[in-house]
Amino acid sequence: MKTLAIILQEARNSKQMVVRSLAQASGIDAALVSKFEKGLRLPTEDNLKALAEALHISFEDLRKIWLVEKVYRILENEDDAKEVLCLAESRVEYLKSKQALVMQGLSEEIKLKLHEIDSLKEAWQSKKPLNATQLQKMKEYFHIAYTFESNRIEGNTLTLQETHLVVNEGITISGKSMREHLEAVNHAEAIDYLEALVQDELDFSPRALSELHYLILKGIDKVNAGKYRTVPVMISGSEHRPPQPYLLDKLMEEYFQHYDAQKKILHPVILAAEMHERLVSIHPFIDGNGRSSRLVMNLILLKHGYTLANLKGDLDSRLKYYKALEAVQVDNNPEVFYHLVADVVKESLSNHLELT
Ligand SMILES: Nc1ncnc2c1ncn2[C@@H]1O[C@H](COP(=O)(O)OP(=O)(O)OP(=O)(O)O)[C@@H](O)[C@H]1O
Image 1: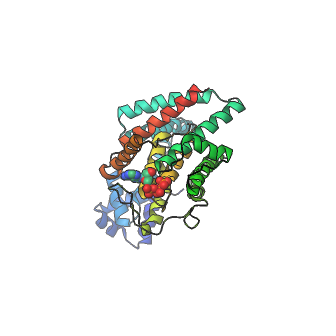
Image 2 (image 1 turned 90 degrees about the horizontal axis):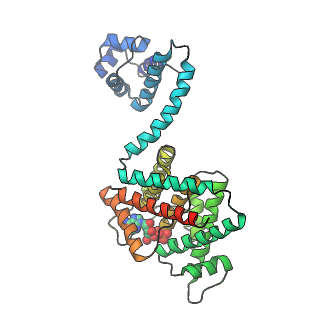
Image 3 (image 1 turned 120 degrees about the vertical axis):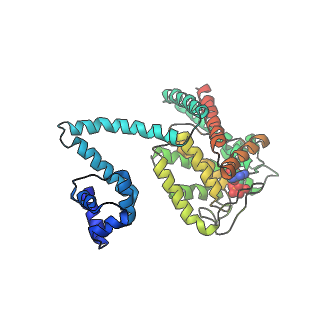
C-alpha cells in the first residue's frame, strides 16, 4: 500500500505541477508541501482538503489513506501493534452500529421499539428447530395471509379463504377474473422464491429484484415482467411523481449501491423499511411496484432472522400506509414509515411466537 507522501507526490507529478504551483493552488506554504511529500509532516485535515482540491483527487479516498497514516504513526514503535489493532477492530464494529443509529436521527421511541422487536426475534429464534409439520402449517397460514393482504392493497378482491383455495387447493373461484387468480398464485410463488434465496444465503441484488418482479407479473404482462418501465407513471391519489424513465438506470444503480453501503450499518428493520420506501418511490416498473417493494422488505427481514411482515389491505391500514410513504416523499420525514414497518414486524413475531 502506498504511503500518503508517495500518493501526494505522484498526483502532483501526474498533473505536471511543480511544488510551488501546488503550494499556490492549495494556499499551503511550499516548504510544508515538500515536508508532506517527504513524509516528514502529516497534513491537517484542512490541509488535506486543500491538497485534494488542488490536485483534483477524491478527498474521501485521500482521507482514508491519511487516517491509515495516522494510525501507523501511533503504532509504528509499539511491540504489540497487531494485538492493539485486533482489539480496536471490535470497537470499530460497535462504533459503526452506534453511529448508524445516530446518523439516521432515530427517535428514542423507535429505538425502544427496535429493542423490543429484537427481544421477540431472539425468543423466536430460540424456538428453533420447530417440528416439521408445525412449521409447514405455520408457513401455509402466514404465506396465505401475506398474499391476501398484499394483493388486497392493490385491489385484488379475493378473500383470505378464496386465496387459500386458489393457492393451496388449485380451485378457481367463480366470478373472479383470471388475473386475480394469477396474482394470488404468483405472489405465493414469489414468497417461496424469497425463502429459497434466504436458504441459499443469496443477497438482495438487481437479479433478485428482476426475478421477483418477473414472478409477480408472470402470465399477466409478459412484455414488462422483470423489466424497468420505459414510460412515465403516476401514483393515483399521490402528490409524489416518480422519476422519468430515462433516469431509472442511474437511480436503480444508486439504489443498490445504497443497499450495499448500508446493509451492515443500519438496523435490519430500518434497512428493510428504507429499501421498501425507496423502491416504491422510484416506481421502476409499470405495474407491480407495491408488491415487489413489500417482497424486498420481507427478503431483508427474513435474511436477518425476522418473520414475514404483513401490511394490511383494509381501507384504514392502506390509507395509513400511503400517508406514511407520502411523509417520506413530500416532507422528507421517514419516522412514521419506520414506525409503521416496525409495528408490523413486531406483530408478526408475536403472532409466530403465539403459535409455538
Ligand atoms: N405516496 C404514495 N401513495 C400511495 N402509494 C404509494 C405512494 N408512494 C408509493 N406508493 C406505492 O405504490 C403502490 C401503488 O402503486 P401503483 O398503483 O402504481 O401500483 P403498481 O405499480 O401496479 O404496483 P402494485 O400493483 O404491486 O402495487 C402502493 O402499493 C404503494 O406501495
